[in-house]
Length: 370
Image (tube, rainbow, N blue to C red):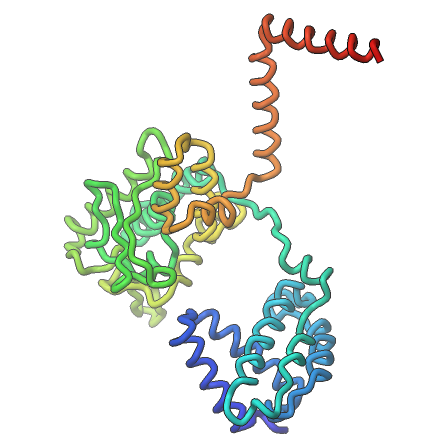
């Protein structure tokens, strides 16, 4: 059975290069596009892209809706359907402007990749995601062992993520020189740190607890790295685990090595294990940014404080912080309204009540005159 089309492969390579260098898309996004294109080719049995017709788009939508997720075994979500179809639509729109395809493709045919309005609303609607509270994270930190070098690193890793809200990919690539403990700052230099959109910025330690417990864990780790393990400024902030063979010729963890993690996967595994061991549901490293955004909503009182909080998360626009990360949970919403109700009752002193009664009397009198 045919497994590829040489001409399609050439044009796909050109498009993916366009996304990487012209559109500056990250690797994960490009991989998603490549997967969407492969799914479409498998459906059409690798027909040449020049033979694209709107009926293919209609048929592929029906085909895709019947597919199941490799991870869950359940039907693909509306969100997945929407993103896959949008990626294909964008590809064919780009393709219709390329030499050799202009006369072969009809631009309006790409519109057939659209989901219905109802399906699109379902796919793009925001849902409340559970977010760990600061107290829950501190509970995890207190329950974590910290005797060995690996245990100290794992504990400090979670403390640092809460202190800074740094993304896991950035944390995996950081070195000691990027942290200024004395000034409670982290310099996320895009030349060396894998930041989102290769953005360079300085983030400050967030005031997550009053007694400095979380910061203390991280400071102890820095001192341990420098004084006990003799790490220098260019060595990793959170080094890889060293794996060696024991006497039984089994590979086991045997300390740390002066090398950064190649990806953020080990960080997520550490988080999952820590939360599970503490008897809590797993919250990934990125969700800590939501935790910090919600904390900022509670304690920031001036526009300047809100802007500073947002900048430390690496956001140029304050609205990004509070629309993407700062959603108020239903439970917290209930607490806020309860507090507002209590505040309103407290402010209803005698004078306010008399004023309200006078307004009511005037309304009654006016009604009687009609």
